[in-house]
Length: 202
Image (spheres, rainbow, N blue to C red):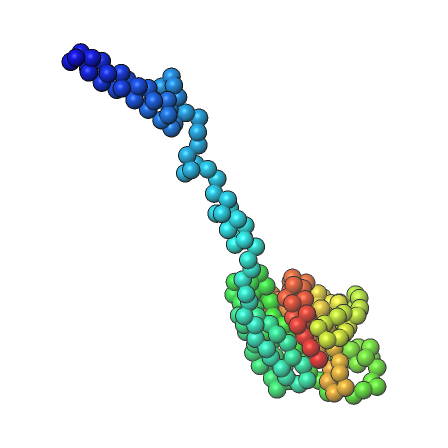
């Protein structure tokens, strides 16, 4: 009887061992590692989607509004606006800008409706007879609320860009220039000028 019970115990233990051996995850019947991927090594699609969303977000730029003599504009709050006269201001971009060496001066002059715009611009640019003025081109240009005239030429051999805009009471001269290096002309300030004109309202 004793040997019979021992035989039964050995059979049950052996069957249990074989059952566990075949059903254990991650192990093959020959004792090698199973070809399964653990959850930790699977791609995390949620994280990838989150990265895609964050990469398309754009920073909000804080703006400031300025108005004077019948015109107004919105420019980044990091730009400096300096009053250089009763009817004249100068704008400077922030120090981190690629246009940091540029400034734009805006001057307002009295103007009466009916005056020929081309004549007025010619007299304005040639007001100082001691300066050598040569025009290269003149064209219409758009700003936020209308159109003006863009004059490109040289003044005393220096490349110069001037923009003129008009309403019933004022003529506005917009003059970009390079700070401290007038020999370079104003061409490198074109990007700053475009930003300013896109926000100018008269």
